Image 1: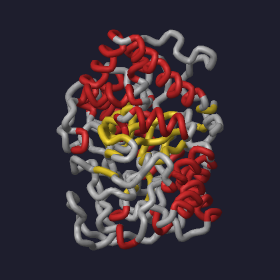
Image 2: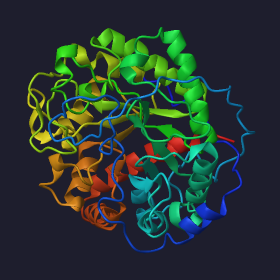
Image 3: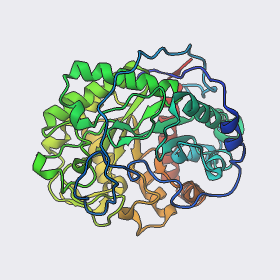
Length: 430
């Protein structure tokens, strides 16, 4: 399948940075957060309805407000982001450490990053961040945090390349950013009851809010299909939280693509997930080890939503850490060259950026050291290793650098992945 080139993204003008955010980021040159202070947003959830807790989940029951309309968002004038490398030689002038840094996405607490996040960017050259936790700060204060993070992307840190600032802004419980200027997004299952055209318009509004807040990559939409309403309670990662758009691949495809296109209308990049699907597992890989999908095959009809998202031009695909016994019974999907390079890149033809699900604290991958997780992910064909816990970045980057120095073939993979990430960033429009 021929995949369209990543569409141009627009970064909004750098806003005035609040004194609070400046002080918070100024300290980001040392120290490390406690493991509980930086976690992936998907693991840090508050449920919207009162239910019997799913296995390994400890939700606090609340009632989710319905989606509320917000005034049309006026985008500020676009300005040129930090300089990017020439498109003909995207890695020209970059050190090995800087190239490896582009292959990581580090957690940044959405209410104010921990010092270790700043250290990951400045000292370990990490080129991407994900806002994690839950925030009620609103658009303006979130923008101050994002801008302060972007100022870390200096010539010595990231070769002047801008950060991908990502977030899980799906809807329902998985809406990291809230507060003034952010609409309350319904769950994906509720979004799936709208027409695709209406959902696209809504997603464009939500995307414009993200753009105003300095976010240029949404780690959404979810393209997993849960077979039926009866499976919701037992499907801990997706169905329990109503993160799916519907119960058939056709509905998930049509509405997932509508969400994706709405984000694109707002010049926000997308990440479809969790390839090759989490709709038919039981355990949540964040909290449970040994999570397996014993159904999905390389020709499975439940892959159709991912194919649709690729055809629609998604910039990124997130790989799952579940084990798919009928595709590769040995390795988690994100560590499987059969899944990432063979199926996603080869059979489905995706040539964009591949991002792992969080491998810094997930119980599913706890058997491997942080360094081993990073090396296995890159060797499998992923381009970005998502590490919500920034204190693991030193060990992860060191392991990838050491492997690249010792193994020429792996070094070529590092270059290929860094090229894909840098090329995607070169499409950030000025």
